[in-house]
Length: 422
Image 1 (cartoon, one colour):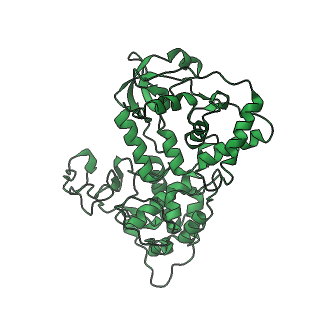
Image 2: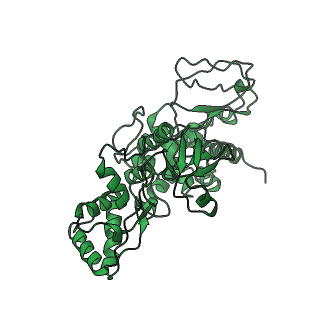
Image 3: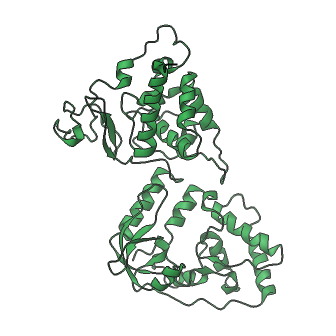
């Protein structure tokens, strides 16, 4: 049986959308974006675009399921139902992002330039319902007319201008793709260039990565904060490698390394370093210290288990209600409680460790964890090493997870920068 025009239209639209949004990290062609509720000149449409990326990254949508929703004439309902199916429980297989939560009406951090009305946004999504009717297998609604020519992309579609005052691509430039020349339309989000089509209907990717791409568990502002921190205090610097634990890394500890770059993918924050001009490799920022940064040997661990347990019981008495605490503090208190109630001293952790999986922590806790400094000691936090007469030191561990060496350096000289940016 010959393929119907509706099926061909679905194939064209969904394939183009998945390629742009999930492979190329660019916005879809302007003549197709509203099919998927996206409008890059509208804050709601931008939120929808990033919500689609959330669903894709959580394995909640695929080419087949989106085509099936279009064929049934219920893509808006499919999109809303799938967003609502995400979980707010930390550690769940498919969790919400800030974009999907904002669609549900929750007050979360969004870029200040976006124009978002209060409350739920589903009723404000700019769906192109006439096109949905044309793509459905059932007959379109009365009066609906399929804009076949614009969907097929056989007319000249020119790229919109990116920045106010920026010169448009010339007609004979590679970016213009053989089109007729002038970029038109309104400026779009900073840092984004759109994919368009040339006069032959071929896709033209004049692409830069999307400024804020879903894929990071952090709020957009926190994502930018970490990137700025890494760029300001690490990239281009000559630093010292510390606390590497792999077979290769242990031999590199103490050597000087130049930071030549960093990860660019959302949610990834490793630095790229080179030793003696060699091939770059990736390390955490907590593995890099400035030359001359104080390094101290840790205190000996106490062998008096009963005394350590009494001290830890006293510490737990300071935190009878864990729910009101920050997620990492709650994890540390729970870690102590689970061991002490079994008559055990908790095993050592890393300095600054959040104890549980990062995905279980709040967005802010994950942010400060990515920005924590290199340990002044051996990167081991052993509660047996703490001075039992200094109860405030143990409470500081609950708050920051820092070992007794880092605390001794910091509190001996409060001017010491805990962010390791000297």
